[in-house]
Length: 143
Image (cartoon, rainbow, N blue to C red; front, side):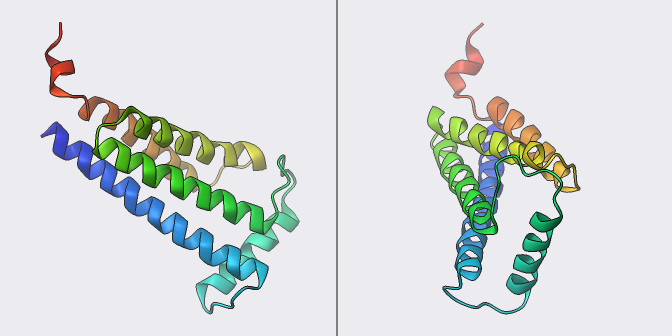
């Protein structure tokens, strides 16, 4: 049962990572003018540019393109981490923590807390459950 829970968490992480990868690539291309997507991509780019223009703090100095590159990086780390944890590889857990810390760093960078903090907190909780649920059976039986 614990293994099924671990795999379910990994699949959620994998899907969320793939969405970040796709969105990151789409938005980098949109921001750089490589292609023009309609609908939500136009709105998202406008919202991001407006956010950066109005941000009181941007410690790293993200531009929209750099920010979407960061989103892409986060998607890669959580996706690869999830795959690694499905295989019960320690490096997978390390990559998941890189994602969690990267996501948390965005709140620090902009000195802002928004509703996405709940997504971040959920990822922290899911990672802690994953550590417990994905231990190999031999580790569980040791005194």
